[in-house]
Image 1 (spheres, rainbow, N blue to C red):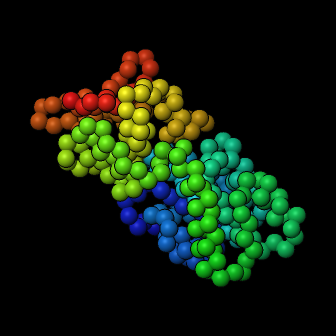
Image 2 (tube, rainbow, N blue to C red):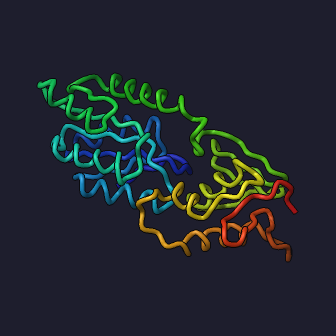
Image 3 (cartoon, rainbow, N blue to C red):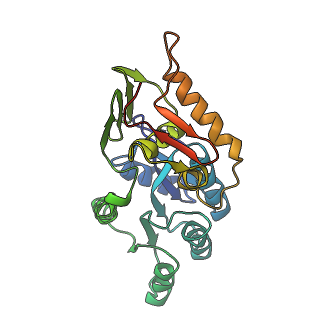
Amino acid sequence: MAEEKKDCPAVALVLVDSDTREAGIKKVLLENFSRVRVSRTAEEGIWMARRISAGGERVEFILCDASVSTKEVMGFLAFCRGRGNLPRVPVLVMTEEHDPEERIRVLESGADEVLRIPCPEREVLARVHALMRRDRRGDFDNPDAPARYEVGALIVDTERHEVRWKGQRVSVTPLEFRILVRLVRMPGRVLGREELMKSLWGEHWEVEDHNLSVHIHGIRKKMSGNGEPCRVIETVRGVGYRVREEDS
């Protein structure tokens, strides 16, 4: 399931197994995130995380509700922190558990915070804000952090999720946008195919090498016009891709 607010690839991923609880959680998270995707079980959550990544979006926050068993939550967190390639994504786990040892186990399995419920909706929102602030302190290493990049006639604005080429807005897919961000952050530097694919899909995702070439081709096609091919994105044969420091 998904709720949309604006055109942005950031997603909040939720594990919740109650229609009533789901409605309340969505209401809180849509205060902060463009999309909220919901799964009922750990297995479904893993599938959803893979689907989000493959579609070019990014998981920016994870919330696990008390309606999902502790065993399911811990299994899902083990995936996220390991093969799921989501080691830095803030995770809030809501629980009705009174035993502190049980809550410690959840924290040790990968949660950033465990919140006892019932509690006021405002407290849940405050906890989400606090975790997001904590996460953004490391934005200097985050290619998806809000920024505006300009290389010649190419402008990529991550806060507005906008690409402009020679003054014209270019409509790109979420994955194409992420490719451009990673290239334009370091103009002139060659990004190896493997490095770029790992950044986009994670080192454990099963994605064919040809997939990246197709997306690069799509970007170039959208930025070509009037018989002029797009040369701002260069292929370095046998290595990878780079954005030219001077476009032509």
